Image 1 (cartoon, rainbow, N blue to C red):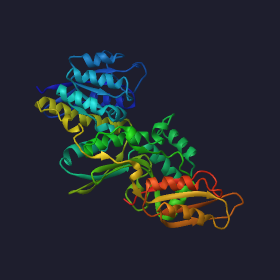
Image 2: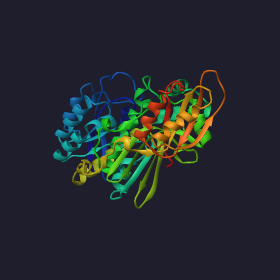
Image 3: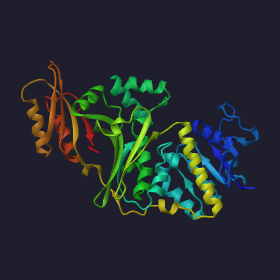
Image 4: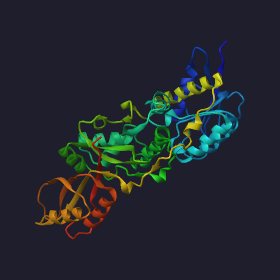
Length: 426
């Protein structure tokens, strides 16, 4: 008779209920199986559309952690606390852990992986980045030993859906957001997604796996999409670009440049044509070249499938007696994060200025004084108040751009704050 590994689930929400469904339906391998032993949630009354035996349900997460029948604990409650406490307690009791919690790993990754190493257990976190896209496994197994030169991609389905609606339907941000909420792609409070923080947390996890660099979210520059307008998307199209919220990281000398922000990407690029709630990540390796991952990055079922993949992997490792692999996740890289002020790239500017002779010359003079070269300009319409002046620059340093924009915004002929969007040629 083949052995079974007991699984306990903490968190019975959208993802948790799908994981429970998979376990009850049966996750079987020829040589072993997985068996649901406990499910903990503060609400065990509300129906989730899955029939769980009452004796498996509890409101006390400690019951899951302390159960002798549970060999793997799945944490799906999100946030930092009490998730951190539960994960560390499970590790201390010699249990493997599977989590989809990118916020926890981004903030407390070193603490968790070090505790797991000392306890001789493993931590699976495929579901923390990319949902159904097997990015973590590819980096740790298929691309193990490969030197990753850079990565970039769309890691948040909510923002990509919003930007798609703004691009294809000409909707303003507020209406596109409302549509995303009605379609179930955005939360009632969408701030984590639209601010770029969700993408930032995922990038922190990827930095650890792809580059061996342990960073904290506070060390990485990020911006959200709240200030993007249909006007910007229209002008980007005239220049041959689309606007996407990108996460990116690349080796620069002895350092790593990492950032998250709205980005103009070439209209014909693969990333530009990732629509609606889909995600995509492109890796560039020294020997393997470009590797593309594409799929739904969130949602109960895709994320649950990623959790199930980790469960099978950890159970197999546990039964074989193989040693833990978490040691490779502790910071072993000498690559340090570069200040974003040192980043070099082209830029898109949209100035709002009075319509009179000499205005463009004043703006160009400031840019030139900071070493910023103009590649192309669009200026349309005439108005009594202000008109947009839209520019694309050649490559420039971030700190020079910040100085120039601060000076330009103080010019008497300029009205309002200048829109700045970074450009990547990919």
